[in-house]
Length: 75
Length: 186
Image (cartoon, rainbow over all chains, first blue to last red; front, top):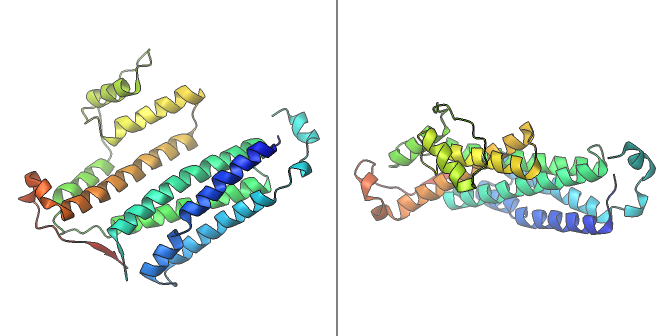
């Protein structure tokens, strides 16, 4: 099981779109409910996890993938 | 501090779409790199956070539905739509009709309106089964959740329309009280 550059670019593009589309959710909730409201905090956490995901996708090294074991598994 | 309904609608729409995208991303990465891969775990974590966020926003929206706000009909519809129903038995079909025919057929047999969520949900299941050749409980749950999100979103829009343009709803205007602008307060 591996991923090539084209697939990685496509996944990164979609993830970046996801991050962009949800970027104002924390702002809306913070402005309406205040910084300390649980919903606002949850939104910050949500966006943080999406940003982490996008960051890791952007930094992912395709050449570092293990081919042998995955090929052996046949999936 | 409050959240206007328009904001709630927007949040539900954005989060609902984001959840679908994140779930697809997680599935794609998991299929290519394995579910234990660091990237797959991050994708599932993001998807889970979006899911939780969506549920909290939906819960906030439902909890603050105005019980005396003059939308008896629409609120009744919400309760009815979310209640379990007992349709008449659906006869299995040996052939695969078009989507519209399927929905119309299911709706007719269950004595429901074609726009009811159940025929649409069943059609979603059949479509997914036809396109992928199989279906899992997880996929079925996700499709059902999407239907629930769509319904709540439509409900909130309908409620806002009623309050903004009550003259467009003469058939329920007399039964419900005067429309009032509702905000969802903290």
